Image (spheres, rainbow, N blue to C red):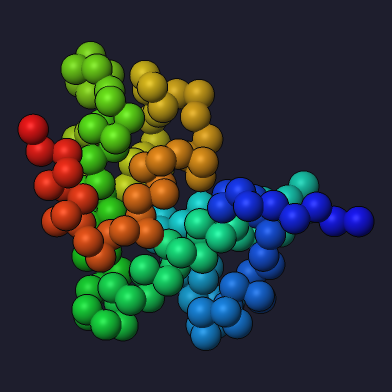
Length: 147
């Protein structure tokens, strides 16, 4: 018997199911993945599996594009502004050596070099990735980290 889970990061949904849930095409979901908006889990046979958190992020992505008219490039820039260093409480030394701290074009989970507190972390399980579902409220998010 299958176990029910309340873990929002549990990879449950196939790409077809998520496309149907969000009323988008499968190629659109692949395009969002290529743009680094989401990080679906990959099975041993390389099939994508999406979690409830991924669906929440994709719902926010659709809202930003459809309702607010944000371009994909613009959305990538907004996601890059999520203050990962504040969320993860990185030291000044870690910040100085971190691509995500300086790169304004892609979210931290899409940067090439992982250093310090992120070195061993799985990005799709990170609280910073979780914040992507709140990107439509970026200003409020940033206010909460201003000292």
